[in-house]
Image 1 (spheres, rainbow over the protein chains, first blue to last red):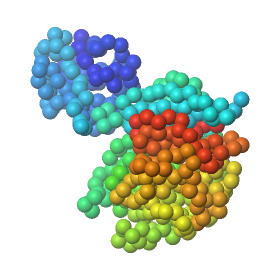
Image 2: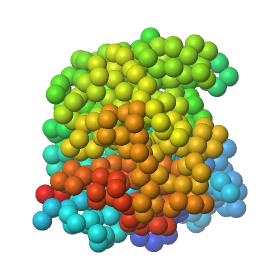
Image 3: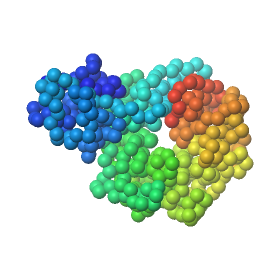
Image 4: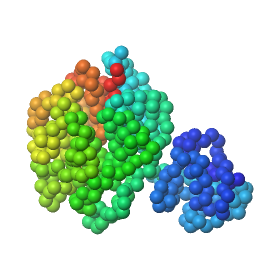
Length: 99
Length: 371
């Protein structure tokens, strides 16, 4: 299972208790397949992490894992093995923005 | 017993203020959607338990929330606002073509007859409609594809469609206003639109009398006189008595005719309210005094109303969607400020009391009159 940590505002929208969600991703584990699985399980999150149409990450959302910023990696690039194995979570972060 | 429910959208959440018909004791609930911008909330005219809210954030985009129990509980509904067809371009600040990009919903206008039908005014300016209670939104693209659309240009606040008024006497007719394109009218249920800006004069555009390009801040209508509209423009307060075919200035003796909010008394179609703001550069009330101005003559002759409002060292703004009226026998007037105060008058503006003083900056105020 893939572990994903969501920012608090999105946990509230999706009514998720606790800090992590676990997702079953059957394809290659990439940003795209993880968010596909996230949106399928929590439809109210559609459009909040990435644009509905272009599927581009929102400007002030970041993807971190294994102490690396993966935000600028291609959406179809495989995520680190530690994420794919469930050893480490994918962190979806609301970026520092504003004063 | 009758009562009112005041729906307040702020920069950091929504609040619901309720009182009985006396309007002297208030219950306050919130923040709902804490931390999110709530540009607007509005209830259905035919089902007061049905309320829609526009919830947005710079991080996580746009959500639409719906309540079926008068704001006690909420459910996120559809949030996909996709422009119809190939979106094309409008004019950017530097004069170059710029692709239409959805940013947020500024205004939600529930149908006068169907609680599942709602119109949404969005930035970049377009009009959307849902007919299934908010699950799916479809653009009424005849507005944006008007021949002038490629010339529409944003003001400092963005290219936003902020006012939607349905004509209660003609279900095919609707009015919208866009900053800074102007006012538009449809007579065929939203399929086609025409600019209705004749008579407006705006010195800040190359042709002050152009058909589009005017920064209309707000329109207001009394439901019994749907050919009469009142307008607060960037500068100038205006009225039309022919559904927008021509406009006349009614600023009269106002201390400044810049402002954002405008509304009409619920029972007196010629009684109009504005809140003058000092200037386009100084977005606060003049002379440090928070005053509503009322005209009982449909404009031109205005009286200041400041009893109960701060009359010194006050430098707040009142935004375009932040004033509303109830329909109780003694008409109530409500407005919210960028300083987080929500004021109410239960006597048509003669006197005011703060319902709440320390909310986040207020973006919008709507009122539901409850049976």
